[in-house]
Image 1 (tube, rainbow, N blue to C red):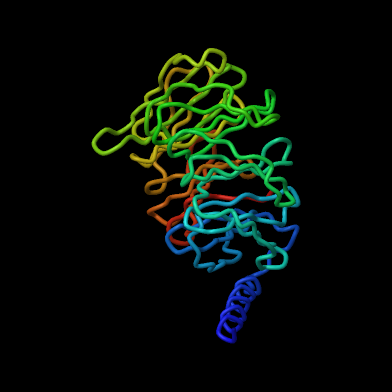
Image 2: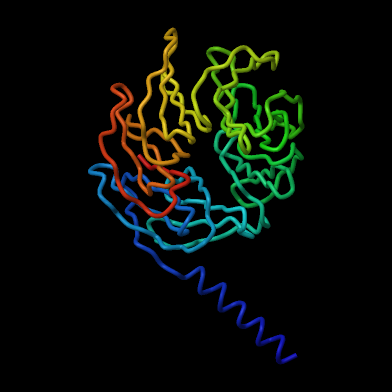
Length: 321
């Protein structure tokens, strides 16, 4: 009995120690770009005004992504090898709570007017839906190796991309039921909904010697392939801004710009093996995974204006404007 009590006391001390670790506090009015660095388990913070380093949180955890909550102060961090998703306060500079989700979380995002957190569990091939109070609402099985999703808020649909399967799972999140499957290539990566054209853009990574060179564009209405756009190689991430669509091609470290009614793509080289692309203060921010930096890009001129060093392996970007 004494041994059990000692073990319990030790476990409480370890948990308490993790929760009480403190990091550089980020003021509520501070705009920033933050990279989630996979290789060293850290967060890098860049001042949103002059692009200088604000702070670096050495969490030393297998984090791969994060979601900024509506309060603009709380960051939820997740990772496939983590047994929980952990919440941190910027102004307090510490962890404030966690949800015990189990291992397998590879992607997350707020949906349903920021009222619901959707979590992809790749180990169990499902999406778990939680209220912001931490209570699970529903769990829906999807295809093999789910990797990301996009929301169509007009129709309350969630489009889930399954990396190791040959379809996109479409879930109606009013009743949390699968309503259809859209056939796509295996090893697809990256999704974008073009509402004005009624299109679903799907990128790809490929496998082994078979490298994906094209973006596949499907009809949201029929689910059928409409056309392809060549964007070599490994077009894995998209961002739409007005009539322009930006594409990150991981294999050639290239950023492409596609514009409505223009056939040719504009392109520039950026970073080394980029994964992530976001918009911040009307500038594009691209994370170079193997160059350990972020690039600030003028989207109109397609010119790199700043290159800023960050931690090792920036894989995901969170911004607060």
